[in-house]
Length: 264
Image 1: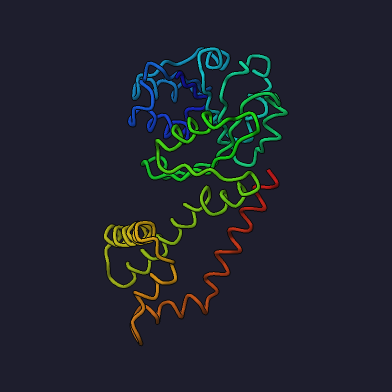
Image 2: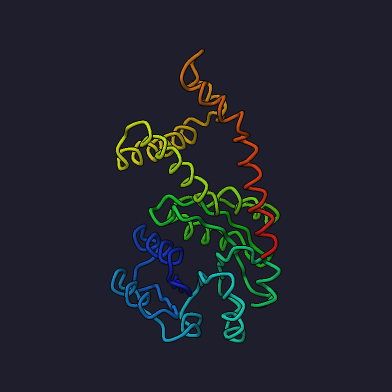
């Protein structure tokens, strides 16, 4: 299997790194292209993959093509290569807000198209990617896509109608979590911790809590109750969060993200 990557920025580079480190294919079987010469040089030196002369060479050299271009640039990029696609190519797009219908209109309705939404923890192999596909993608194609995108974390198949929600609670969610970590760390500093230790405690608490829920399969409410002793410190903090509308604000934020994604 030959894999081509158009767009070698953060997400394209993260997926590339996962593909190589997990041995999905060898570096000799990957070709990439980016308009940014610095990115091309950096990726070539780091991973040893071939850098194409243009996007057309990526298409002609690949069985699978990952489109990792920013949504606002995707239309112009696809316009320049619309006549160069091989009908047997499996196409994977990570562009937020670009629906399968939009991709088909810009690539071709007869093409095999997978739409996905990764998130930035993919940069450290802890990503979670939602995936859906058009009717031309068969079971084997989907397994290939899941394997490629799962190389830098988890990959979960969903219906396209659920993709906006995936953006809201996964694709954009790291930003909310980083804000939460920063706020907790600020409070830790106010209470006497040094800044570096405050960040380490706060980030480790988030990471460990997520791991505990995923590994035990317990409901988050049950795990929360396990920490809240009667008349204890934790329930006092939870009360303040509830009085401040914590849950409601989080839900409103996700809903705003979902609506914005639909507008793209």
